[in-house]
Amino acid sequence: MPATEFDTTLPSIRQLQNWIKQKATVEFKLMTGDVIVGKVFWQDINCVSIVDANNEQISVWKMAIAYMKVRSDAVVERDFK
Image 1: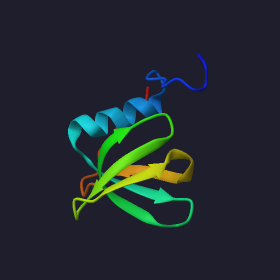
Image 2: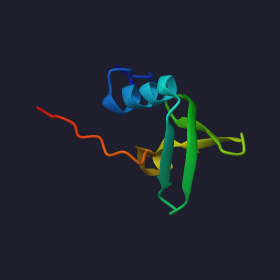
Image 3: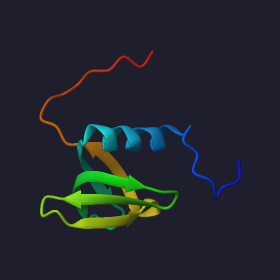
Image 4: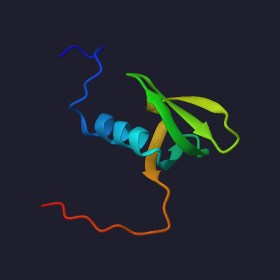
């Protein structure tokens, strides 16, 4: 598959798609140290669009993301067998 195509078989792509469907609140820590919290609106091969608490849409280059995680007070245990 050429690097310019959107590969929906990749786990990170599927994870973001699930967060979009769930309308989950997600925390994005950027390589700059900045943190963006909001709901994932869309993604493409290069960027993720996040809608924050002020209903502002922010587009972030995927290469700028250090990590991303769902914001939740509950700890969910998973079985990674």
